[in-house]
Image 1 (cartoon, one colour):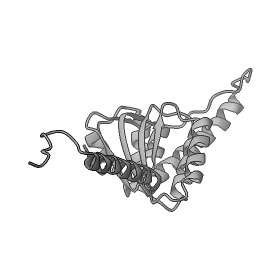
Image 2 (cartoon, rainbow, N blue to C red):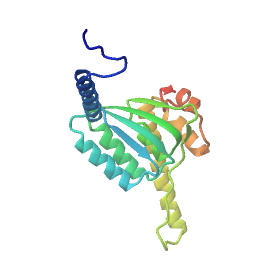
Image 3 (cartoon, rainbow, N blue to C red):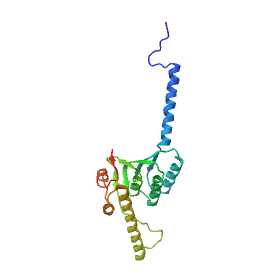
Image 4 (cartoon, rainbow, N blue to C red):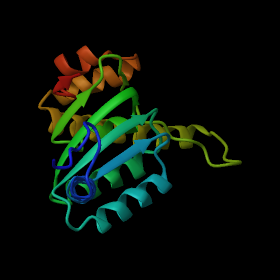
Length: 199
């Protein structure tokens, strides 16, 4: 009478096969991570985040697509713009998923995506640019006029950027930025085109 393998027990051959399967899937996951790397953009947008993204993009030579995960209250506009330029100039397809709060500069990161989605409870906030005083600087009428002129220029530039990425009128974004009120995921999609899908 031949040997019978009890149900649920692995022979040496099937054990080797299982180990090979696990190695195969681990290799495929690693390859997928190289081809479709994920970039996590969490917290305040600053120079450190800019350097991190630049380094990751430069190292991802085999990437075909970048997947952005964004959860940020915003931060500095210049690093946000630099991150946007780095991603858009990479030549890869970019998908972006947002949740939590998408405030100010974080919206710039979201708009780097060719495909953009957010969770149903995501809160958006578009607001005008602000300029901080240098330490010890006096807020004179002349300095006030200079700052106001700069802010107006930045706001127009930002609204045109929003318009170019969504197809909605720049004036619509200017009005929304002046209100500085929170925006639901539905309004972000239906009224402004910031995302295409809500998940």
